[in-house]
Image 1 (cartoon, rainbow, N blue to C red):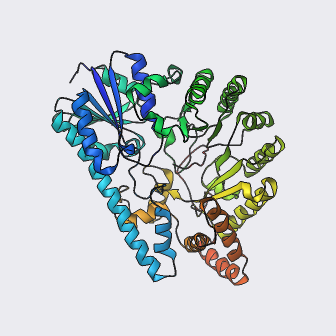
Image 2: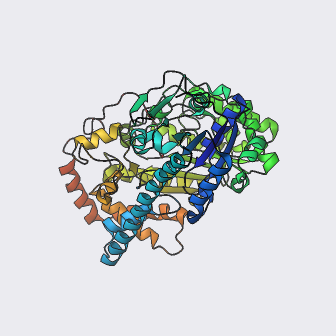
Image 3: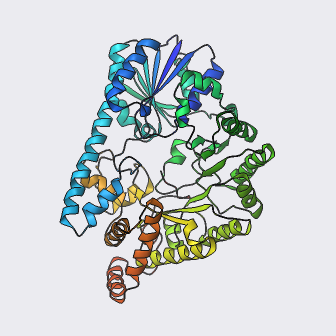
Length: 537
């Protein structure tokens, strides 16, 4: 059905308060290409739960949009985030020696699962509300959640709904143009309820994305200013040529890296800083610097920051194997706030997860930062503990490398974070674990079954109990806070692994579990080629 589109309403579905960068980039791009189209952004994350339905109805009645585009950020129920501590709940339920704490954890788990269930059903109810109030409007759904679970989302949507997978600027423009010549990857549920799928056949060049017109965004998003005191997301490129065995970025964004113009990126950040007083920038790329070419791109961006004397503190997930002393100096000089990266101190686990770099490369990059003038910038280590292939031997090696970093940067500046692999559909690690019998072949990745959810936050026995109880003990440490918990957890694991009786017991257990020498693909074959980089998803 071809439509004459005059207006678009973007509805950011409820999540915790985090800058809605994806929607803003789409709305900015559509405005620059079709300035005559009226747009408005309603962010339900900023609306109290009891008022959300009324806010949506009121906005629909005021705007009467031809298109209502929903942005859905989160869908899986195992992902810990600032509004609920699912990780602590799982740890207490599985590993607390206290039956009272186990019971309380079960109650908390039921509450979390209920909240997620209600939230998911409510999101679909908002779409049905749009269809009832505006039967001729077209519904679009995008965002990170639907990029992973697009087919599931489409089946639950009203008719005449387009579910966009991955980046959405060019797809949204084709929808605004009437959907006569659609582009991008999407699922479409037509008027008759039939679902079709289109794979992406074209490349969206990021050079088309100029600096965001923030005065325009203010005009369509009246509550824009409520985010300016936090981290503002800016992206510099898309696409990932790497092959992390638990990650979907290379499928969602494509394997070919595409880059924005460094001058436009700097203009965007400069505007945020000088017009709006923004002090904190988070680069939202899968990895801010990952390949040799992307490192050159990063250097050009930082050159622009330095030339313009932009006064911000910035961060982003880093990959350090292509770092140079000159780039380390520019990162520090331009205001890097923290060094954020996935980290394991074991080459065996790096190889097991097909991360594609050497541990010594990474350690040398840390030394470059120190030599370049590192002062108090935090070194944040997101550690995929108990990944497939983890043993006492590899865990001890990681602890030793953390101690090396304490010595290099100072203990207070090194923040290990307890992080487990979240199993995502259609990834090599998912296929591996199905093959091992850890997951049934027909499991539901969006299940609300708490026993399935626990498995998707991968922390299996026998190491799971050791790590879980260390984490719980760290939570009870005097003065514990989020930063301190990770250090305390690793200290407790170190203490436990130093006990002779523990060493002997684990040695026997692991000989049974790993009868062959060494680790790697001989023990855990992963059906993937190439290299990859670890990241939080």
